[in-house]
Every structure is written in C-alpha cells, then in structure tokens.
Length: 465
Image (cartoon, rainbow, N blue to C red):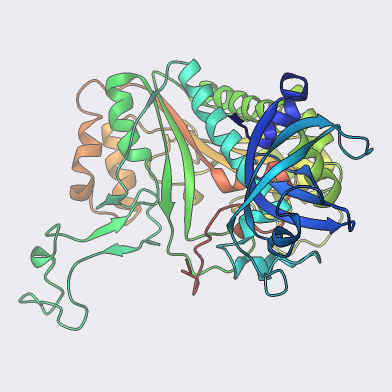
C-alpha cells in the first residue's frame, strides 16, 4: 500500500484513482451525517485538504467517531475514488482509520473562526497549521530552493559564512554580543574596562549582521559565490518591517561592476518569482484572494516587465515635484524612506525600480566611490508593497581609498586588516548584493507584517519558542 502526500494526490489524481493508498495528517474539520462522516484532512503539503469519506458500516465506526475531532492526527487507509461532490475531484473511501494523536476540539486553539495574526504569533507551535502560515511555509520553501537553483545554474559556489564574527560589516554598531563571561563577575583590565582576553574568543565577538565581507574573501578565489544564512541586528525597532533575526541571500562576483550586479539582482528576482508562480499556484491564488488582492497579477508583471533604472539624484528630482506632504521631507542627501520608495514603484513607475549612485555619506564604507567624489556605485532594488528589497554595490577595490573610508567611518583599520589585504594582492573590480529573505517572502505574499513571514520571529522583548 502506497503512502502519499496530499499534494501528490491532488496534482496527479489519475495516477492513483481506484488504488488503495495511505494518507497521514491532521483533521481540519468533521461533518457527521449520522450514517457516514466527511473528514477534511490536511498534511501541510498543499493549501486545500483531502476529503475522507468514513462510512458508518465500517468496523469500529461508532467507537472511533468521538475521537475524530479537529486537530487530531490520523492515519487513513482506503481507496482513492472519484467524488460526487462539486468541491473536490477525488476523495478517499476510508476502510481503516487509526487515531495517532487525540485532540480536544473544544479546547483546541485553532477554531473555525479567523484568528488575528497577532494572536497566532503567541501560539507559534500551532500557527503553521493555519491556511496562511502553512502557505507561507510552502512559499519560503519554494523561494529558498529556487534561490539555490538560480545561483547554481550560473556557476556560483555556495559558501557557509560564519554566524559569529569580530567585524561589523555595516558599521552601524547594532550588534548582539557573544560571550561566555559571567555578567555578574566581569573581569577588568588596568583601565577598568572589560578584559575580553579572558573571554572565549579572547576579544569582543558578535552575531553577524552580514556574510558579505567573508563572501568577498571567497569571491577573490572562486570568482562567483553566494551565502544564504541567518543574520542579526540589535535594532530596537517594533515596526512591521524589522526583525532581530532574519535570513540574507548575498552573492559576490569577482571581475564585476555595478552593471553586472544590477543584471544579477533583476534576473534573480524574476527567476524565483517565476518559480513561485509555476509551483505554488494554489498558494499564490490564496494570497491574492485573502491577503492582498491583485498580488498575483503584480507578480506576473514583475516577471515579464523590465525594471526601471534611474539615479538617486533623478529620483530626488521626481519626489521633489510631487504635490504631497511627506512624513520625511525630501532633499538631496537623505536616506530614502519607505514612503518615497513605494511612491516610485507603486505610483510613478508602477513597476520595480533600481536606484543607483547614492550619496556616499548615507552608504557603507565598502562601497566604491564614484569619480564625482560625492556618490558611490551603489544600487537598491525597490518593489511595490515593500520598498527596498535588495541593496548592493560595486565594492571598493582600491586599497588607499578603502583605508581612508574605514577611518572616516570611525572604524579601526586594524580590525579589517584582512579585508584591506584583499586589495594588496590581486585586487579586481567586484560587486554583490544582499536580499532580505523575509522581505522577499513579504513581497510575494502581500503579508503586512514581516513577523508573519518567518517561522519564529525574534523582535524586541520576544524570544518565545
């Protein structure tokens, strides 16, 4: 007897019609019709469940019926048959049902009523069983798999960069410290400061904010590489756009300029979105109907429409001419806010936009300074509904310029000696970007809060589960 996932059954019902099969999952609902019952069974492989027909004439029906409650885990054996009902093409005519795990429907937190996403975050151990979070789980899976497909198909090597680091890639200082020192008995040096030589790493260490600097090391030996892993920001922010722990996709290319970087970013987004539309049609339709009407059409347009390219300076000129009062006033030199980014993508151009050549004062030290002395070879990809989804640049490959930028950023060049040495032996133009994975999930699903785009959100004051 073949054990099947519900997705396989619903995708290829003709392959298993009239075949005796086994399905395992959790009960979503039960409709008792006295002489028989309909069970809506779901195993998480697809949005919609599979209907199980359990006839009263089956052995043990009366004893089993009280145990068949919402949330229970069951094992079903029976034949897959055509369904006379209009809502499904096939159903299982159950011959045997084994209750693996009982559930009390009355106390089960996930009732038929629609729960708020805020409530569901408080029961993260159960929320993956809901339609929305189940669909997000499958979307994350497809986007992650497609990410690896994209870079592997282009010859990129997957590099595992460290989670624990002594460097602050962004220079923003929003870092989580990693230490084995007893906070109640901190050792002090002669200056009265914490003596980190007695710590595990014998120097201050942190959770990484980016794998970029480490990926650059391997790009200088392997040409094209990417890393895809968790990153951390100790930013005390409670907005719908921020997480303390999130995942980043970060490719690095040797012998590449900003032009190649932009081409890679646009091609990447089109590839993974196309994969999502082709492989998760039912989930995308669900988000289009229940979460963000019109998102399916928007994603289809992203795949087939060239992105708009313009400079930061030109974008400022456009925004300054808009007849509205911005929450954050517009002028050259500001860091664009979400309201500005979304206006450009949703109202002015009505498609994704790639902005380039930002003022050097608002960008990181590692970005290559342009010949004008005022801007850097940076780019941000802006998308409707989210704003910035990708940030990248051509990296500064000139040793003297990079050294000066590190000093001006208030960082110690000695902490970046290895990064500087990459510019001493065999330096070359190179470029890369970072794509926040949860922002990508939020963009493709239309979810309002990024905390619902990751299995276990980590935010200020919240480290449950």
